Amino acid sequence: MEKEKFTEEKILHAKPGMAMLFLGILMCLLSVPIIVIGAIGFDEATGRGGLLLAISIILGVLLILAGVLVMCGLRIIHPNEALVLTLFGNYYGTLYQAGFYWVNPFCTAINPTAGIKEAKEEGSGKELSINVNVNGSSASKKVSLKTMTLDNKKQKVNDELGNPIEIGTIVIWKVRNATKAVLNVENFKEFLSIQCDAITRNAARNYPYDANDGSDEKTLRGSSQEIADIMQEELQKKVLEAGIEIIDVRITHLAYAPEIASAMLQRQQATAIIDARQKIVEGAVSMVEMALQQLSENQIVELDEERKAAMVSNLLVVLCGNKDAQPIVNSGSIY
Image (tube, rainbow, N blue to C red):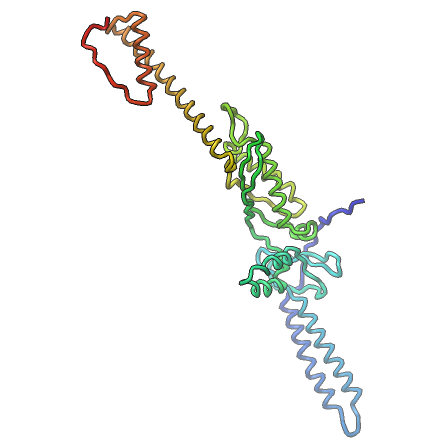
């Protein structure tokens, strides 16, 4: 039977850290006079007070250890941060509220992304020492609750029609439940990135890059906002178990792959030329019809069918031609 994932979260209400800090310092300071009192009462000549000295030393050492142990439980939580704690391998609780707190000193903060971040940054050379110092502290175990951006670089996929395209997206997200983010998945940042890749590829395969023959179907180019909203909804379902909230998804890059870009450009140009020619012909026909109608209504000139056909031909050539027409003046009779 598959083991169920951890989903229940326990919000910790820790003790104030300042009071426990003073207590730890006080324990360390009290150890000094206790040891001194035992040393004063010890007489080297007679050996009297040896038991007192031993007891005082033991008490002093125990007080120092207790003071240090108390101060090991101090935790600082900054705004928009959370700390997930475990005690001897069991989930202990999560701190959300910013402040200075004290928790059980045997508790361990966990954040799998902190160690992976350190391993990646160790190979960067210049920032090696700075990153190791930061990641080695307890601050690296805190889970950031700030709004972050995932830049999913452009990737080559095939659209619904099989055309290779390049598409890139960005995701605005934040950790809503730090406990789920740490305990339910191995690395919530990598988990989000992989799910974003899958959703992007799936969206590209379900829609064509552009519509053909004036179709009203959704396309990646014409309905990018609607498709981005669909991607956001699907991605939110995928990362819900990781305690992540998807704030927004946007398509930042969309283009045909380089190997077919020139061919698709010629296709788009041909389609644009055909559409333009169609508009020109429709306008020319209406203008010719209007000219013949006005000539007939105003009785300017009487034209037979042959002359009307010649006039229509000449007007269409003039109105639909790519170059300016060269007029020819006829000083004789049109007949």
